[in-house]
Length: 263
Image 1 (cartoon, rainbow, N blue to C red):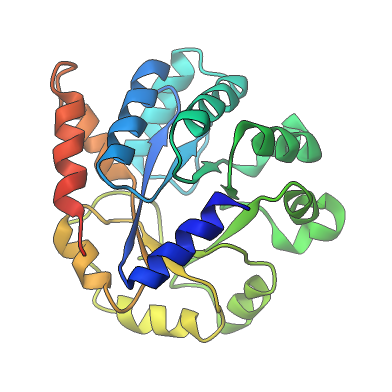
Image 2 (cartoon, rainbow, N blue to C red):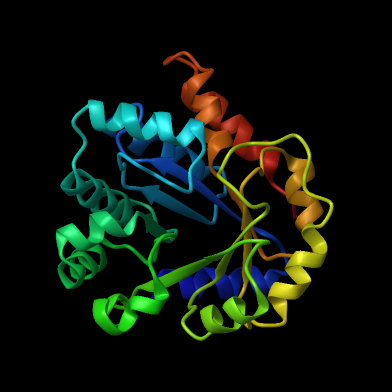
């Protein structure tokens, strides 16, 4: 059984909002990636995205982009991402998902990537630039299903009803709703139109809704209760890392994640 299926059932049963966090593999280092993930899991995060660093992360804002650049400068390779996924999934029981851009998967080999991701313990894949209209040629979704991986679809406020309907036919696990159009990054204020947007997405999807892009404080998570199923915190975690000394980084991350919790 896919770990993500079990976790989504548990979140629904307890009628609470889940929390998904995010790391860029190899930032600040591979060992610190491991320790950060371990800290977040111990503080109650439900699932974690492991982003494979990429030179041109189009959906990401400056915080994650700089983290990707630093990780690549450190020499992080795709194979390192598989290694750390395997190491984490063998020691920590929450679901892990790879976040990547399609260029990496295409170059690696689509079936090989899905097979190796499943072997490493991944529960799903988040690939924001995967062209769903090209499935007939790429067979990405077919291979993901074959290797028991959920493919998490990403939608935005700019998504038309026709696009939402088409995307819903391929969506599995949960759907990732960006809270605004544009790139990732922590914000102080949530979009006032978010509720209407999520209600529109609900009309097309019968799987849980996750909301990301700008979530950075408990008030943001609390505002999603009753409207979404999962809050996604990405850039804000890296902001904590960037503002911390090595000695207090893990304690700061633990404090930040604990402060986000909403029951």
